[in-house]
Image (cartoon, rainbow, N blue to C red; front, top):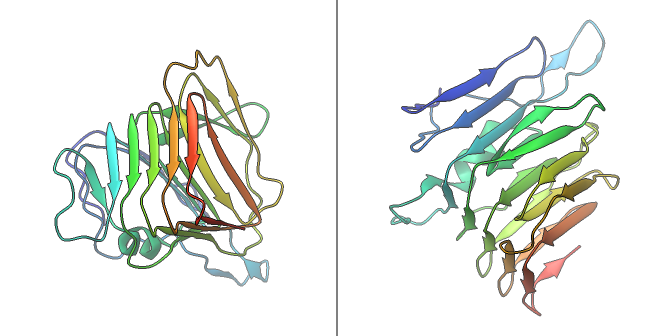
Length: 212
């Protein structure tokens, strides 16, 4: 399972799993999986799980020498979890309306390289200051039957969401618009039924980025 030397909050209800992690260091190894299992009783696929990881700075990189001041994760490790929903930069809190409020803990989320496309049915990158997808990064929403959940976030920041659900929605309130930059570099590829790229202080998308 994951080795987490810092504070961890997790909930693993029967059926689909859910795991929230707030950490400064994290190693994802072993057989820690959230992918779908066959439900013989209901004769339908069981709903996959949700993973949310928060840290002051997160870097997703498959390079051998990632930044030392960030929580380092790789696309290979994250994809191997098999989670339907993957949130990087915030933890999720259920709301009365059936959606989730994002408790953003990251100032910056950087996807610097992806050896393979980063994939989930619903993938969210969120930070209070900056979300950056470096040149050539690929993110793809995989098809599935799990409906997305409405997300709410408060204050300044940036959010990139790639979802297999065309109805995926997010709402931001209380922004002062002093911080919050989203940047997509050259050759970035985002593929999904629904794409959300929003920031409170500015968005830069390279002409060669592919968004569909």
